Length: 255
Image 1 (cartoon, rainbow, N blue to C red):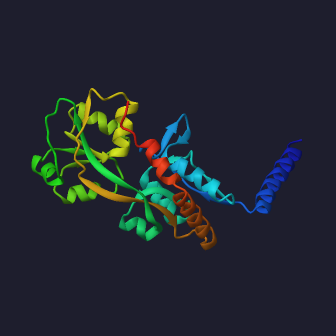
Image 2 (image 1 turned 45 degrees about the vertical axis):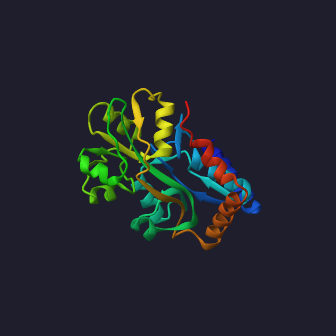
Image 3 (image 1 turned 90 degrees about the horizontal axis):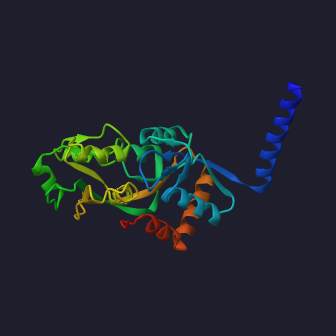
């Protein structure tokens, strides 16, 4: 009986593989990024957010393309490692760093521009208009573990706590008095304050301290034909305006 079940399972797997091969479907594994909403939102184990919407739009634009692994949430270092080994074929919405340049190829132009700002406790009277202002105050800054800008902040002489990738925890640290400033992209700041109902407890300072392009990346281990398929799909999503609509849908600071 057990042997028969195994044969049946093997048959179904072969049939599934055959049907996908006949349809010309190309599977591209990816990983979701932990604790960086709304780029990736873990909704009861199911991924939502900017990147899942972009991947779905690319699949609609290129029916031969199928992304897998969107519900597998991992840290940025693990995503970088998976790009290097070829365990994943692509990564959505990451900053440009020397490590990422080595293990993957970024697609031009950027998906969007990351505008970095700081949040403080609502009763904090700090006024910050530049990174120089932040340096002069010489207060502890919290940010996300694996953030591409953490080392840049340290190079400016700032004290940085990037011990966790959970950005809700990082935001609550400043409310508890551990660090004065939470440095993060405004997309995530707006989402966290809105979704957690923190408008009366947190103040996002108006100044944009830095802007950096955010890219879609293809592993250098990805087959050239697959890479061209991914590039073509993203180009279609950009050309039809869906890329802008997705970003605007999630980048809201309203209640």
